[in-house]
Length: 264
Image 1 (cartoon, one colour):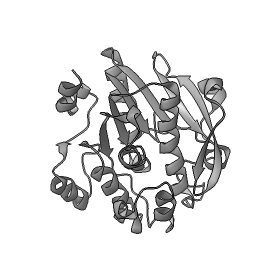
Image 2: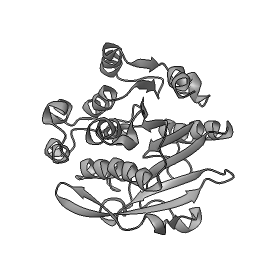
Image 3: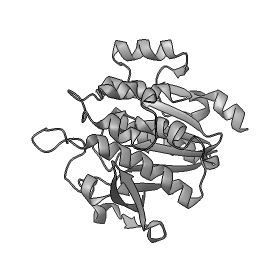
């Protein structure tokens, strides 16, 4: 299978936690089973490009993303995981990712444009794999900042034949933030032609509402942490989506076997 993994955190480029470790563990296992695996993450300013040997993919240069009616250049960089023949692609943009923090600055203040960073991240990935002409069988997004990936795949690219039959998996992790993202996030997403009736959760873009948006537009939901907020667990069960209790670095087909059957 061709499997695209999407995460904002990944060992060894960001600190170790359940999200960054899962973002490494599952791709490694699936790569070892001869699947064609690609990983995408943002090129945060905390990532040392020289130490990790990142280099720009020149043939992918020249792309721009329109975010809230602003033209933003998209730069793609790539590196190989240490001791692995597995490539990691980095979504880069000076405006959104140069700063020395992942979600917040050194004082712990949440970045006001995290909503736009999330939009740029997921749109940039989908445009990049189109330019690569690499169509995945499965897209597996992880964490709250990747929650827009299922939405954009299903709504923004709904009429794009390139993404026909791509299965969407979303892993939910308990890495919350306080308060809400920018109150105009719903307008920024609807600017991309996604009807506001599809965006009810973005009327209050809280951590839990972002997770719910990801759940709504995915085929399979995976519990990334052993414990999740009860309201999210209830929402998953009410959604009637295929659900796997806990994410472990085992075979992808053990996590969502129906997708493997369909691909075969």
